[in-house]
Amino acid sequence: MTNEKPTEYLRFNLVFRMQHIVLFITFFLLAFTGWSLKYPEPTLQHAGWWIRLWGGAKSAGIIHKAAGVTMIFVFVWHVLYMLYLLGTGKTKFNTTTTIVPVPKDVQDAVQNFLYFFGLGKTKPRYGRFTYLQKFDYWAVFWGMGIIGLSGLALAFPTKAQYLFPSWSVNWIWELLTVLHSDEALLAIVFILFIHFYDEHLKWEKFPMSMLWITGKMSMEEFKHEHPLEYELELKENPGFAGKQKNS
Image (cartoon, rainbow, N blue to C red; front, side, top):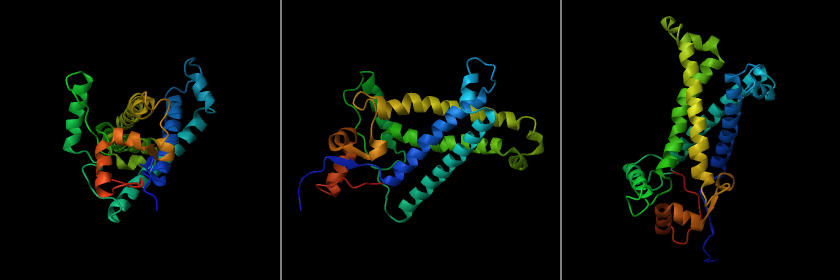
């Protein structure tokens, strides 16, 4: 038996990494094909080449629908998996490690902004997730509610029409189209400019963090980015071996 301290910390297990990879692939397929379907006219010089890249509107539509259904599947899979972890006691609520927003997240956000603008002297000390990571996570639930449901209705209009009252027929489809398109654009912008920077393009992580593939981060990075979780690990399991905690 060795007392050697671990050099890496297992932050995400294989199931979480698989869910993230499927979400990542389907998101970009939806973004690329969705944008081509939004401007499908082959005569448009700035957009025609993009729809042709996907084999035309018909094939782009098939890819878009398949990716959308797959994304909904992995979303449901994730929710059921989280319920399984809670139900079996493999994860427990702890304010330091939970993905659920807590009052400290508001304090962290204010403290971080004050530090960023030179009005505060110290950065906030984070637990397992930062306030921005929590926002990033729960935004998926908001997005799936708007993009997912509107997408299903637009993909299967003959079935969805029975869900809407007759007095809405003159405007409901236009509303669903706007909701689906604009919320998708918001998601794309957020992922490209906020998520990518925060998780990959910061100077200390550039050009990419391998966490989403390996599930591991160095112990030094762990202590620096999530000091409260690190201290909790030491308290509960001195000399811990980097076991995964789900919360």
